Image (cartoon, rainbow, N blue to C red; front, side):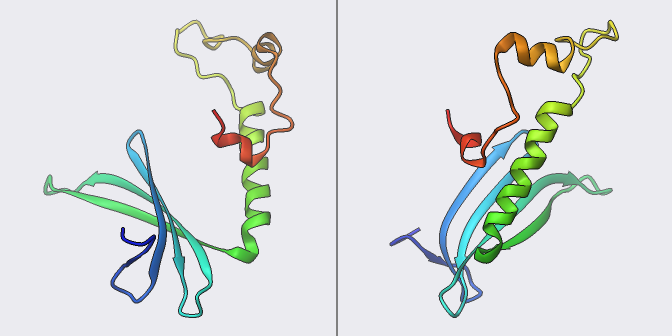
Length: 126
């Protein structure tokens, strides 16, 4: 990437690119510009798959997100993630049928954590 952007072969400038490897998937966050020089975001999920012939290929799913939708998208994503953190069942990894860490509410109260007011900006904070 030179001077903050690269040409991607379709006359669209790639302004910023970030790859995130997460297990068997890779997510690409790419900021691009239209011919009218308006920025938009593409989010691509890429998974390595194997065909019947044994050769691998990458299965990709792409989402285009436009500036006017950022706030509503962020709000919806944050709400969905918060819901999962609160309501997702504990995965049983020890075989006793009770879950590996007990009940969700017990885990949250024992750790003093509350996910009710998670903000999207907090998800990347360390």
